[in-house]
Amino acid sequence: MNMMEIYFATGNSNKVKEAEIILKDLKGIKIKAINLPYPEIQGTLEEVSEFGVKYLYSKIKKPVFVEDSGFFIEVLKGFPGTYSRYVQETIGNEGILKLMEGFKGEERRAYFKSVVGYCDEDGIKLFKGIVRGNVSHEIRDKGHGFAYDSIFIPEGENRTFAEMTREEKSRISHRRKALEKFKEYIEKKLP
Ligand SMILES: O=c1nc[nH]c2c1ncn2[C@H]1C[C@H](O)[C@@H](COP(=O)(O)OP(=O)(O)OP(=O)(O)O)O1
Ligand SMILES: [Mg+2]
Image (tube, rainbow, N blue to C red; front, top):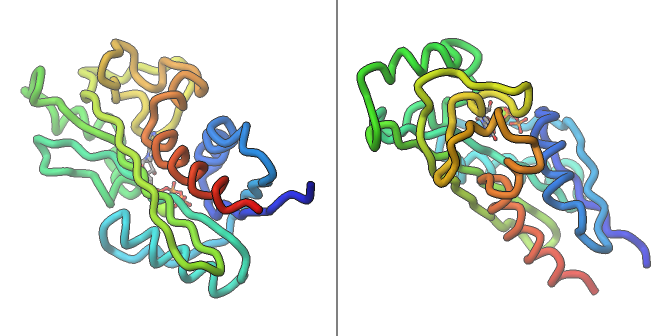
């Protein structure tokens, strides 16, 4: 059977590794990661994904998806949210923990959100995933994960995402939930 090729446009190799784990048993489809840049407008994750994938499809005219994601802390009114990448590169996890000093228990609730934007000749589709949890009191890392993983403890767990293996994280992550919906949609489209 000839494989349908779908591009995953991202500059983040950690997202690629996790998408490969999550989509490994996708039948009849080959996912090809490409680092094709696209303008990341200021807006919600949905708006960034929709604008980005529309832009890329207009350039390459081939089935393609992007994923915009972020880390949202409730007591900080959703900060860093859509600024997650910039905040990670500036104040980082130490800076976030400083902002969280004095908050305890439920006040440390946070979530990751992922919005996958897919486009082909039939138009654009968005697939979303959220994983809820808490901001840890300290940075806890076992060398796995990336960015905010070392300060996020998912609900029902006592380890941070960065203390889990990539496989364990990818069983419950926001990326898993969004890409599972994408997988279900795309498998239905196959001839
Ligand atoms: O699973 C995750 N574990 C930890 N941190 C995460 C995760 N998922 C997103 N994040 C944070 C870090 C990243 O810097 C930002 C996403 O920003 P975002 O624009 O979607 O990613 P990016 O610029 O690194 O790659 P891309 O080329 O796909 O836009 O949110
Ligand atoms: Mg980005």
